[in-house]
Length: 257
Ligand code: F6R
Image 1 (tube, rainbow, N blue to C red):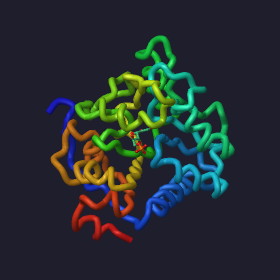
Image 2: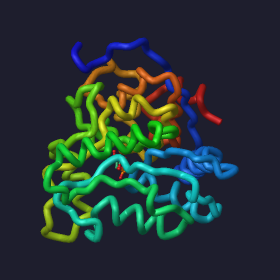
Image 3: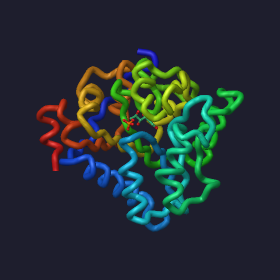
Image 4: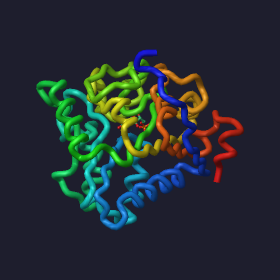
């Protein structure tokens, strides 16, 4: 299948914790370990409600991003970094205003770029120049998206402009002021780029993610479920609370701590 499931399959490691707070802390600790001793880590970062407690944990733990380079996964096309629903704003509010960091090493996609193809190429080149992503943090959409790679996105896709699924726009409407529509397009790091990370940690919490987690880990793999691409990667940790793991059946209790 072109751009589909091609390489050998892998089984992501699964960690199921009792609460969303514990799951977020486990992910925070993993990121903290990556940053320990001032290592020059290259992190791929996500936004969204799932990530808020992770960044809150990092801030209260006093971690430093001083030696880290970070690449955010996505941004809405047409939103300025000062727009309260932009992912640039989210990152400033939840992480960068709260932890020490080097602004020159914080990379964000520019939703206002006049040439989206050139912007995507700039980002890919910057990731390459940084030596690739070391640890990639992911959330998961209710439709199985990772970043803004919606169902149908090729598994070998690079960073690019995409059209958002109606269900994603509906899910994210709550982040926008009343009456303001969610942009139709976004820039996202591609699935192929995500799969070139050294290691991937996906965090899913809440019952609304149970079906997507089950489809990603146990359903038939393929572009209809972008997160199933993670089964092509040899080093993936999926961290869930019990609600998000509830569609996994016996596998979830095997992975439970
Ligand atoms: C955002 C991103 C998205 C979210 C996903 C889940 O940067 O990459 O894939 O991780 O939409 O969002 P929440 O956590 O708000 O449910």
